[in-house]
Image 1 (cartoon, rainbow, N blue to C red):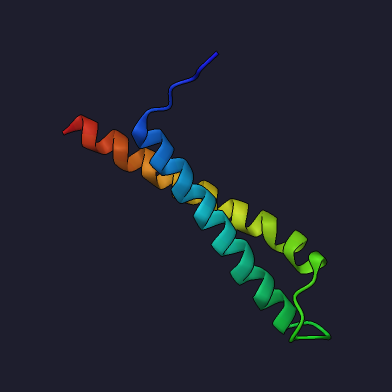
Image 2: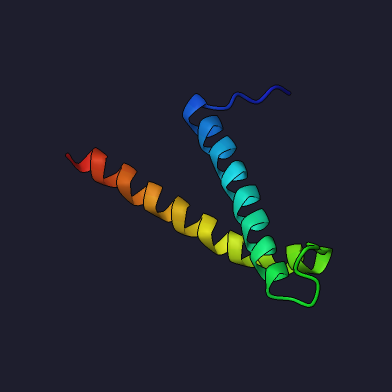
Length: 74
């Protein structure tokens, strides 16, 4: 069964995936820089960074949802 995806939804998904990956990477590097081996980013750094990045992603999605709702009210 073929599923159609609205273009706007697809663009948002791509944006969110990219944001999450960028945030995880940046946060993991920050965590690594504060650790015992600042030049090495470990799996533990990425695992600790992921929930932080998820929170950032949720904030972004919420702000987009609010902005979208506001534009429909106008």
